[in-house]
Length: 108
Image (cartoon, rainbow, N blue to C red; front, side, top):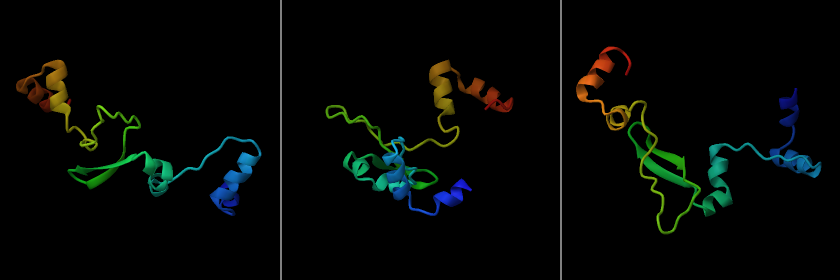
């Protein structure tokens, strides 16, 4: 019933009425609304990166903007398990034989 009532008026009207009543609130935006927001555009919060399966993906940039040491956004989200071997080699010093054993056992 609440959803039906809420759909009767645009979100902007509800937000204005709720704010006027002194209740903290904000919209729930879809991605188009998020990336279309003037502040998001001004802060360059949308970045794009190539992805192995999805083509180009839109991502949210790091909110810290460092002039002397900018934060790179050149890597997309990894595929499931994409860095497993790399992490296990570097953090646990596992060799190829141990990784193969873990795969055979169904651990990886």
